[in-house]
Length: 285
Image (cartoon, rainbow, N blue to C red; front, top):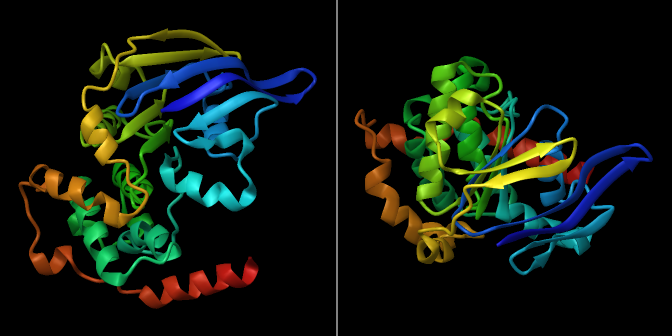
């Protein structure tokens, strides 16, 4: 469960990100967070991931007191929450396979586990044939689907998608909404910040939290998760914990136009570049 308890984020005397917000999100829910630009949607995401700390109030994610975590504990929080951005934020020097694999390399997963996980995620987003392409070679819709796959890499229990359709046409926007809904049906809690009426129109009846000027002014359509047992089993903090969910969903993840086994498990052409980037990051830290 994710809980915000009378949370306020104040930047200056007259500037607030959010003001006195209280809500609970059950495991397995799909929630739209709506409101105009500047209403506080991105601030919510940054509070969840502890990029911001609240001025007042408390945030809890299951057993983690988010607002009181030490810096040394932030890695645990951020493995539980995957973030999808409007501008994709893929690394241009890495190909698609490497972009998805990078979070797994960083946390020290074995090569075999990485290959299995990346292969499953490419199937999920139906882009197995794009594994060796670079971000500049993708369409906007494809880049966002890869961004979603990367956010899922470490098996988070929650995905926060921050205006993921903002740069897309209507057809691709609806496709992204449906992909996130599919991910939710497989057991992941999904929060989608959007003001895209085309997407909202497809999912009538889904819970919507509306923000205005930093305040939560409406929360309708709330319901308990119908897959609570699955969600408990499918809130992984590692690839090993996620294997049961992967096996359950494998048949659903098969695409009509299957690639050959060789293509699906093909190793990245630039693993050396990944290593170089990780070494560079280690030196900088």
